[in-house]
Length: 407
Ligand SMILES: [Zn+2]
Image (tube, rainbow, N blue to C red; front, side):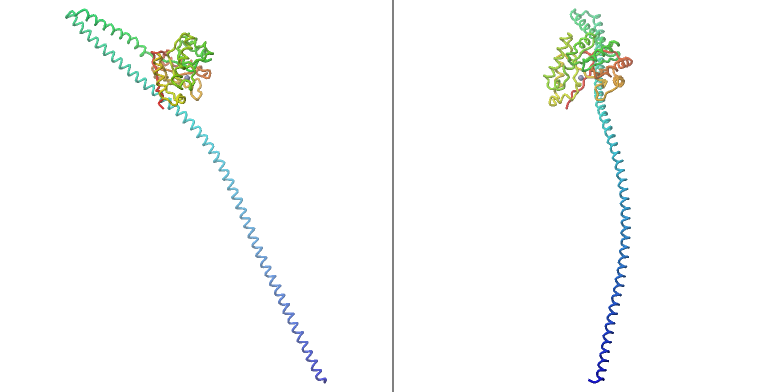
């Protein structure tokens, strides 16, 4: 090989090497640029993501704040509603209380209505009695007028002609009978028409209160009627009642509903037991009767399978035994569910008796009726002031009868 070729080879070699170097440099620079660009891009992206995230976080925080604010609001609303609910609950309780007292008032009104209608019945009956009396008086007057006319006629005839003796005698007899009747009527009339009569009646005795009631009656010189039950341990009081001239009525031996009203036989036994015991003790045979609970009571029906014929049958039997039975047209209301003061009891009687000609007054002779005992002086004084005189009930005295229950 010659120099020239070698030189040329060397130049070629160098050229090659330079080329390689430049290519490597280019690759290196390109790679570096790409890396830097990637770094920048990722940094930018990261930054961008971070700020978005931050923003989101801020938004979330705000949302959380808003929610918590709303929650507090709702909590407050809830508290308010609870408070309102409490108030409503209180109001409801008050309303319930009011409702209860209204119900009570309603009940007592119902009772009062029942009483008033019973009173109405008796007033009606009194009216009927008065009408009857008027009818009778009219009849008597008419008969009297007729008799007078007859007498005048007879006198004329007597003057004109002498009648047979027999006929004359008959007329005389008739006249006498008529006169007798008239005198009787005249005697009864003032009893009916003058003055007002009050019959104080005490039921359910005798009791430890009996002597105290008797002492008050004694003090005022007033006689009363005791419709008693049979209490063997208090025998002395039956004797005192009879001895002092009060009337002692039969109110059955036991006053036990299940015994008095279970059957007619049981009823009869109740009446007869009282009658006999009192008779054996005092020699006084009573013919006055009062039904426990009054003739119209419905309580007795519970004990006889709701036999509404029992009381009417009992009335028939009592009559056949010579008994007169009595209800009342004035009540002291001392046996009401409500406990009245002495002054209220006295007012019940005095108001009830107002305007009546005959007042049959219901009271009770029981230790538990202390207020009745306390009211008695005011009752007697008040009735006297109203013009009443006091009598004891008898088979011929005025009476008040309730209608027996029909259902
Ligand atoms: Zn009674």
